[in-house]
Length: 166
Ligand SMILES: Cc1cc2nc3c(=O)[nH]c(=O)nc-3n(C[C@H](O)[C@H](O)[C@H](O)COP(=O)(O)O)c2cc1C
Image (tube, helix red, strand yellow):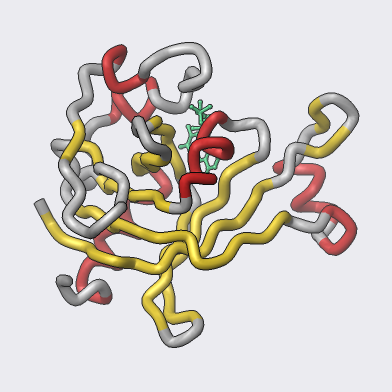
């Protein structure tokens, strides 16, 4: 595996513009903007935030995810597209002419071809955000009610099994 520290700066520079999260057996792809990297439990970990309402929330139960980071400022149309509809209704890979990048570690999820950096991860822990302990400013700004319940994020801690540059 490549030295992941050397990839994090470039990945974080692009993250506010979006990256692709692939999850599930037949991979579904969605755009993410939030992602953390660090050492937890003595392992290199990539942490992603997925709302309960997303189709990706179902797909990630498979236990693995891959974060594919485009080169800074590229793939803007695909990022927009993969944030605008759900894999529940449509195959986004076909719709936005995206090709899968075959995974390198065992059981990992394929990434998205054309990206610059790939983090193949295995979910080693997850936790639901707790509404009661979340700052009100954050709740009001980021969490609207869906069917009478705030659509909170589930936080997934993914051990980085492999990371590499295309
Ligand atoms: C720049 C950007 C970043 C996003 N980041 C996230 C994120 O970190 N977590 C999340 O749950 N949704 C995020 N979204 C929204 C999802 O991409 C969007 O709801 C998508 O359609 C969900 O697809 P799915 O239902 O196939 O999983 C983001 C959208 C944009 C435009």
